[in-house]
Amino acid sequence: MMSGGSGKGPRWTREVDKPRDLRGAMSALLFYMGRERRYLYAGMACALVSSILALIGPQYLARITDSISSSVLGGTPVDIGLITTLGILLIAIYGVSFLLSVAENRVISSASERVGDRMRRDLSAKFDRLPVSYLESHSIGDLMSRMTNDTDTVRTGSAESFSTTAVALCMIAGSLVMMLYTEWRLALVAIIPTLLGVAIIYVVTHRCRKYFAAQQADLGMINAIVEETYYGHDIVRTYNGRGRETRRFEEVNSRLRTSTFRARIATGMMPQLMNFVSNLGYVVVCIAGSIFIMEGTMGYGVIVAFIIYIKRFNQPVTEIADIISRMQSVASATERVFDILAMDEMELSPPLPGDFRSKGSVEFRNVRFGYIPGREVIHGFSLMVEPGSKVAIVGPTGAGKTTLANLLVRFYDPDYGEILIDGIPTTSMSRAQVRDQFSMVLQDSWLSDGTYYDNVAFMSGASPERVREACEMVGIGEYIDSLPDGYDTVIGRGGLSAGQRQQLAIARAIVKDAPMTILDEATSSVDTRTERRIQDAMDRMMEGRTSFVIAHRLSTVRDADVILVIKDGNVVEQGTHDQLIALDGFYRMLYDSQFEGCD
Image (cartoon, rainbow, N blue to C red; front, side, top):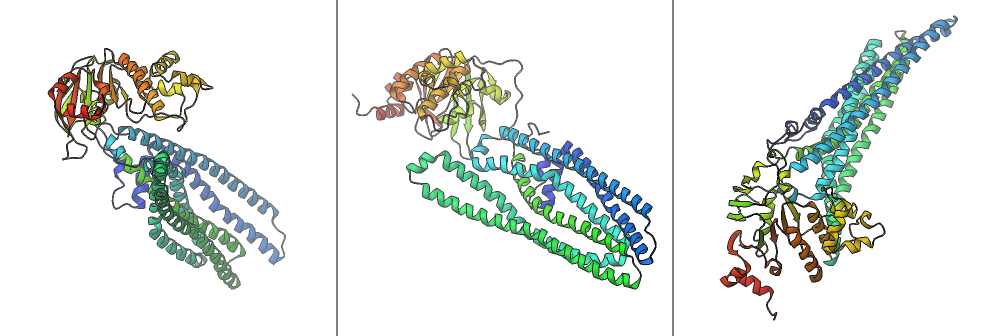
């Protein structure tokens, strides 16, 4: 389970801390697996029993070989009954071992998929609980890479890493015991090449982990650059920035190529090294075994058994070398995901009981706020808004207008003071409950890749008739009707102008039918004729509702009940349009500057 409103991530995410290491990351991942460890342990049990059976088999092969060789050398008949019995036992042993291996593969694969699914769900839920400031201060491409590439790396290598390692260690120990039991002198000779190979692999893996970490980080940067470049491709091309972005891409891509190449070289070298060690082991066994046979201290069956045991001994060593390489990627991906999961979360507020719907009263009480500690952008702001009022917020760019809207819907909470809706502090409501009270239209109109109906009816469950009515109110209904599939047409990312996207966003706000409305430059991307039509629609939408209108074009807020003039985070003037014009202050200066030269 994820943590609630403690403001900290789950405790298992804090196990991976500096200095980061492979063991710490994999320990945290094992702890994170939770209930899926049952499947992991069940799969490991199947694999261990299968391995033990595979280790017993060579003993019967040795007996068969010795029986046949003694009969041939001694000129006596071959004991067909004994060989048949031993052969049937071998078939049964290897058959059960095979079935257990199939069961292990199925169970371990299930565990890995479940872990990957839960990690994606946890990461998605974590994004919902992270402060907006975190999301705004990090590259979207890098966050997407953690959500997709890193979670997929963990999914494909989590349970398999633990299972293969445990089984490999068991096979190594079991093979060594069986070799010592069968012929201890030959065993001591046979393991020397393997020990040399293990020492080399340890040095290589210890030095190469940095390449795997660099590979994951560079992959995230590549995603970030691609997302930024192609999402804003029109701006990039307009400013002839393609060359600059290409150079950025080439620089990171070059680093990614280098880190990936070095990681692959390290990964590919280990199996080849262990193949060499295995072949060297076969040579040693054959030479030393021949000497012992000539001395009469060992039979031919021992060499047959040892050839198999050497293979069983070296194969898991090779697998460990390979799985350690995979673990490097899994560990790096795990750390990147847990970096997100360990971030401080927004404090959670319980929802008010029942279905709360505001009457439209809003009060700011001495609100102070800054995005960066020590740098306030809102200084002691206080305001009482009566139900049904239209409040306009105007001022120069960067004055803090949009910040007030962000505070209203609890994208951020005030550093000092409080905001009340119907006399209830917003911090006493859940964020979802606060946001249910507002329809909001921002400067940047977000649309999904769904249909026109899906985008306008977003989260409201509105009927097709209601969606059509809202679209006609804002002047885009005729355009949608002209499309082949009408409101069932899927919206393409580049198929709409900025003005049309804004019309759809306003229609979505109309459909939501919330008790209050926030319009942040809602008509900034439409022409004057369309603006008048939208303004009429918004006037009908805002009738009887409290509304906050953030605008640079002062002609759109002349009918506001109260206009707040904000400068440097302070309300420097307040009143109706006529009152502020008569005051002949900062608002009058702004107004005159927009209509300078007009008759």
